[in-house]
Length: 139
Image (cartoon, rainbow, N blue to C red):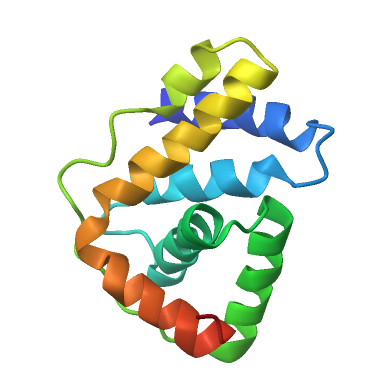
């Protein structure tokens, strides 16, 4: 896991230094969390990551808006469902993202990474949408 941690830290350095106020970092965090979740991942981490991907990809939230939604969720409930883990988590991985040139190419690949990870959790989409509707009052 040390290599994955190094890759995550490298990507975090890139996204945290990114000048776009939309806050690309939150999207990368959510994609990474959902893609790398395992049996020991806390339900709150996985649910928040998947809600973030849902809000971004299906409701056009920016990373900054997703971050605010996470804060709202944290204030609404302390109990989150444990979701079944899919075997596959998307064809794009963090090493693919980091292999892209920094700038527009990498930013576009982060978007595709988010979509790839979100799609891999398709069996849980209804649960995540229900959580978002209930706690965030969105349509």
